[in-house]
Amino acid sequence: MVRTPLTPEERLRGERLGALLRAARGERSMAAVAASAGISAETLRKIETGRAPTPAFFTVAALAGALGLSLDEILGRCAAESVVAPAPVPAAVPLIA
Image (cartoon, rainbow, N blue to C red; front, side):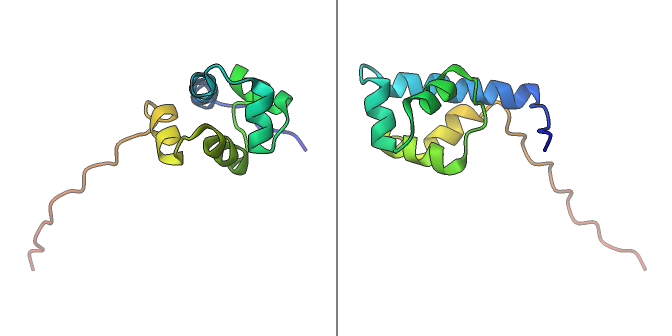
C-alpha cells in the first residue's frame, strides 16, 4: 500500500502538535509520559519531533489524558491556522412567479 504524501498544512499541523506536547510535558520525562499514555517513548518522540505528523486519534487522546489537555484545546491550538471559515450563506431571495 502506498501512502499519499502529506500536504504542507498536515506537516505544519504535526509540528504544532509536537510543540504543544513538548510544552505540556514540561520537565516530565518522555518515558514517563509515554508510559502514562500507554504508548512507546519512541512513538512520543516521533510525534514531538514531527516525524509522525498524523498520529492516530486514540494516540492523541491518550496523550491528552496523560498531559491534562482537552481534545478541544489540542484542536484549537494545532489546527487554528488551517481551519477555513465557512462560506457565508446568501440571504433568501424571493421567487418571482
